[in-house]
View 1 (cartoon, rainbow, N blue to C red):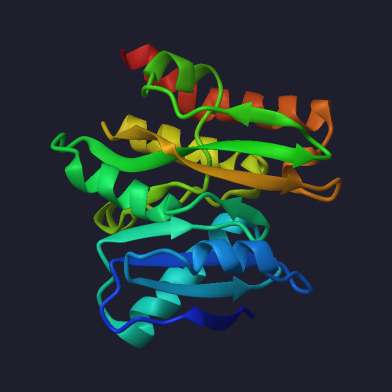
View 2 (cartoon, rainbow, N blue to C red):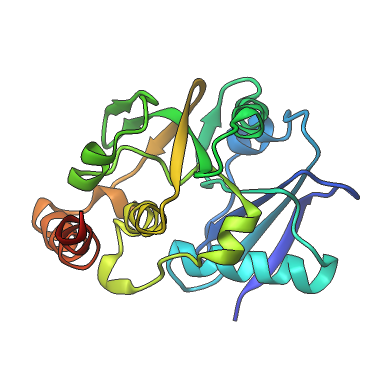
Amino acid sequence: MNTFKIIKENKNPQVLIVTPLLPGHKISKETSRTIKKTKTPIFWLSSCGDNNIPINARLGVDWYKKNYGKLPPYYIMIDRDIIANKGMIDKLVRKLRESEDEKVAYAYASFEFKGYINIKFTASKFDIKKLLNNNYISSNSLIKSSIIEEIDFVTDEKYKRLLDWAYWLKLLKNDYIGVPCPESVFIAQSKPEDVSAGSVSDFNTKRNRVVQDFVLPMLKTS
């Protein structure tokens, strides 16, 4: 059973932030400090339970709807241990709001893993071929709430570690794309126990499953 905690409340939020947590985990001080500086009105809650990230996120969204009604215009999942640059979410909101393309469902930031894994991803122009080959978009991306109501998260354990990639591909299958926001940046603290720090063989197994179930069906119909 999940437990929910309000971190920052606003009567008229524009963004719903959900931080999924496993039992015993907590939001870092740096994450709290940098995200609370967001100028856009936010409602931030944690959703803690023994589930994978998108299940905990979905339960957080459902809890908000049950207790507060209609979702704010935008939603974002924020990991428990990131350091956001100044105005990260504000910049994502601005980018998504300014997009006139109805196919644009989300805005994504530049990000960097530091610690156990060290790698940097710059938010480059949305590229369908690139996304079909590998994921380059963070799960910490701002999504229109209407989209997550229309197209639910991918939660199947068989894709665990690449569930965010599976969701971006699911959106692509439904003709939705993302828009880059390179001026929006965050650093993710990488630890050995993180899902993303698993073995190469595990990554390849999960990648093959995503390719079989999401990528190949789209290639066959293109």
